[in-house]
Amino acid sequence: MRRAAAIAVLAIAATAARAQNAGTPTSGTLPAADPAACTQFDWSLLREQAWFSAAGLPRVESGGTLASAMPAALLGLKPQAQVAPPVAPSREPKPGTYGGVLHVEAPLSPGAYQVTLSNPAWIDVSQDGRTTRPVSARTARTGCPMLAKSVRVQLGTAPITIVVSNAASDAIRIAVAPAE
Image (cartoon, rainbow, N blue to C red; front, side, top):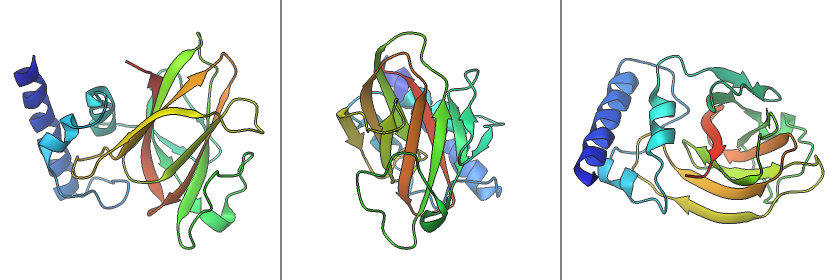
């Protein structure tokens, strides 16, 4: 099983490298590829890595809604000063960074969900549009193509609002899915 996972990671890393070299749009500068780093997160993110490297990953502009058919997208961000999130970021955004808001349909069942990003940025999750849900766990690493950070939150069955802030570029890959 571990060998199969390592082979999958190498295949995904090769795909990401080919896409980057071919001029495929990416969400900013990806860190130097270290496929072994992709298996060093506190929980498996191979599912998210596959989504992020999929051909035809949809683009959703800030303020848009993530379709339930695909739990991942390339989120278009704006200069932080142009973002008016319904929930203030819990960490003060740095000057010159980017941010955005993503809406997600209500989960069918309550439980642990994870929000994963391709590049470093701050994540706040709300279900009432006023307060931030506490993060129950987080994991972050450098050196893995298209994966930088994932947080876990307990969610109910209300629509979700995700605020991304402190991103270095104007787009970021994001996935929202039940925790595995």
